[in-house]
Image (cartoon, rainbow, N blue to C red; front, top):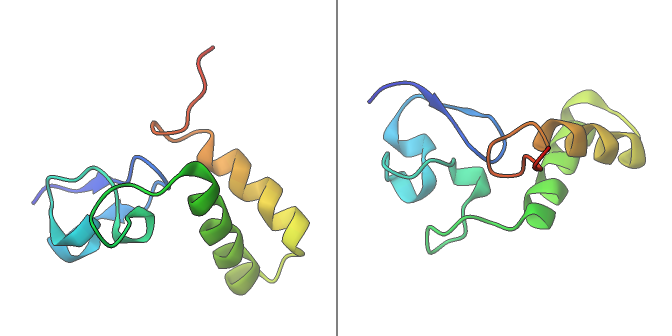
Length: 82
């Protein structure tokens, strides 16, 4: 498997277990996947990334949500058209 990044959150996907439902053909990671393998919505990913930032960086939730939103908007799945 070649290294790639999740199109939703940017997480490196280095092995099949890190891909959605273990399928390295999916362009997104297991954090951004529903149990059936479909990709979560933007709002679901935003909630998860916000919680991750709060937990790992100790930021206030509103600050973490703003940071998470900025990070997600740079990813191919969520990039807005210019």
